[in-house]
Structure formats: structure tokens, C-alpha cells
Image (tube, rainbow, N blue to C red; front, side, top):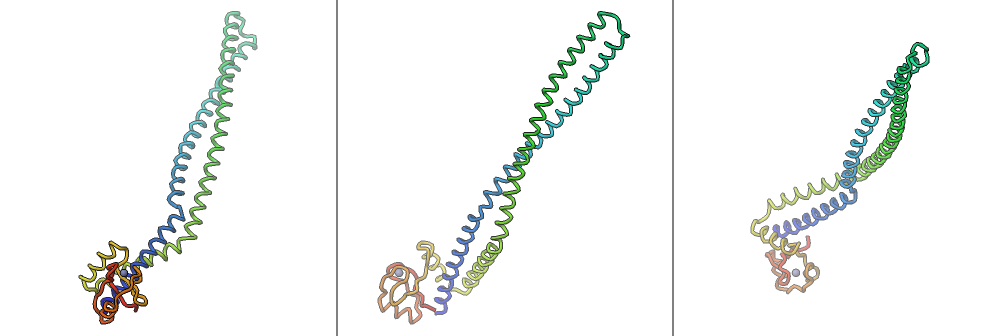
Length: 235
Ligand SMILES: [Zn+2]
């Protein structure tokens, strides 16, 4: 009889274990943490690339600015030579005028380039701001989810651990042949024990012959003739 009580208790703990494990999986799915974390990782990668692009654009702007300073200085120097009255050679004056024109064209092109670069930088900054806002929003969401469910998650995990320990402890006190029989039935049918209610197998709903119930009451190991589960008395 002791063995059958243990068996019945073993099945109860297996059922509890299964339900806690199911709850934990459902909870994890509810959290969708993995999906959120994956999206954050991808977005962080994109952000890094855009930040590199921003540094490159800033460098280009600086180069462009330096060139403008340099060319404007050259133009000023040519103006001095052109208008200070010291240069009188016509050819030399013509050369300086042409040179000034050439330099001014370069300056004009560079100025256009600089404006384009500054527009680009502005767009990049906007992108970065948007991405950072998005990341902040998702990170906050994860943090809130974790906080909300971590207590429940921990509780389920410790219950699962307790059930596993209980199962090992019961198994340690059980007859090995009975245990083996139980697990082979459980493997095929999902459960290995039936507790008859009013003479009916509570798993397959078949009426059990009085002779079987009588043997069960005497403490014998009896199987339901229909579903093959081990019969246990209600404790
Ligand atoms: Zn049955």
C-alpha cells in the first residue's frame, strides 16, 4: 500500500512539474524579451555605422573649410598684387586675373560641396537622434517587463526545482520494478496512474470489476483492464 501511495504522489508531482514548466514557457513567450533584445542588437549595429558616417562627414567638412580658408587667402594675396599698384607688367596682371578667376571657381565649387556636406550632417544627426530615442524606448520596455515578471519567474523556477527534488526523493523510496512499469505506461499514455472514482477508472471512464477493486483494497498492484494504468486508492 505504501508503494501505491508513493506512486500516486509521484504522479501528482509530475503533473505539478509539467504545469509549472508550461507556465514558465508561457511567461517567457509573453515577455517576448528575446525578440526585443534581437531588435535592439540590430539597431545598435546600425547606430554604430551611422556614427562612423557622421565622423567621416565632420572630417570632410573640416577639410573643405580649411581649403576654403587657404584659397580665400590666396585670392586676397592676388588682390593685393593686382591693386597695390606695384605690379605694372600687363602679362603679369593678366596672369594674376586669370589665376584669381580660377581660384574663385574652385572656392565656389567648394562652398557648394560644403553646404551639401552640412545638409548631410544635419540628416545624419536627425537619424541618430531618432535611433537613440527608439533604443531608449525599447530598453525601457524590457526593463519594465523584467521588473514586472521577474518575481513570478523566480517563483516558478523555484517551484520547478522543488518538484524535481520531490520526484527524485519519492523515486528513491520506490520499488524499481513498479517504477519502471509506471514510467513505461506514462511514456505511452501521458499518465501512469488512475484513481478510481465510484468504481470507475478516472482516466478512461470504464467501470472497474468489483474483483479488481477488491484486490486494490487489499493492497495489490492492479492495472485498469481497459487503459492499463496502475490503480491507486485516493489518499
Ligand atoms: Zn482505465
